[in-house]
Image (spheres, rainbow, N blue to C red):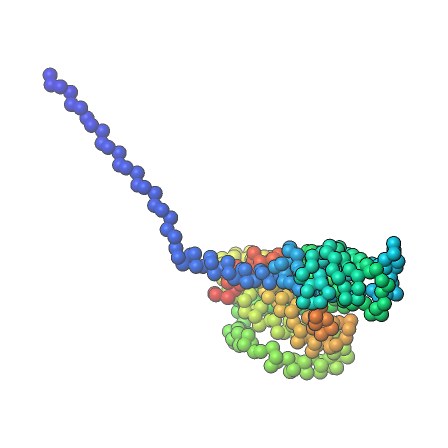
Length: 397
């Protein structure tokens, strides 16, 4: 018998080495551009918020990015006259405080002139031209001692550099709301914006469904007219619309200036875009859903309310954001249709009045400006997850 044959096992193939992830320069560029855009949009808002809660003195001398660090302020204060002196141990003394109570400041250096205010540290004693020596402490207290009676009728000035410690407060908001009518203007803007947002969306939803799924003569012509209205400037049509509204108001005995006319004006100006986006969105809904609804005997109204509206919520949210932001920031239509009544002043007009009255009071202007953007921010962030999806679906089909 021959020797048994030995079978050799075939070698296993070597596992392929994992590939290193490919880095796309285009992807990095897109993310970098997105980061820059987000920063450009976010930083001004953060700066406005920080400025609105800063102390007025701090805001006047430094930017919002220095809010957490102390700021140096150059100031001057006049010392008391000779009539305020007291005699102690054979010397004549004048005492007081250069700083206001609860000012949040501490004195770093001081001097008798503006040129020498950085030569003496707080706590040093320097000679005065009117006689004697003065000591100024960091907390602002001073003591001027002379061996002879003071005779000056007008107190000399002391110049100093004060460190202003960071201080945040809501007093800016309280002053703006209580003394400048921002609370009434805020409520007026809500009264104007909420109905003027809901009305055109409801009308546009019905019209968009009819143009998308109902067959009737002239449908294509109506779509063309709506698209054409998108390019009509508001400023060009505002005067004819106002004249027509005044004629209708006179015919029915309705007051011309008021919220009703402003709601109708915003509805008319917002309908073309709303109908265009909603119609394009509804056209893209599955036909099988509509056909099954018809087979079940559902009417157009039933189909619209139970099936189309829930499916169209992303598009409705996108249009609601657009419409609300436009109305909230509007000034022209509100001035034309509301007039100048104080009880119907909107927030944008009140901000202009605030700017004219307090042009140098940045702490009040920033507080008023942030009040005006709080509601748009809430609306946008609460609906932003539907924004891009609804906008793209309604604009590219």
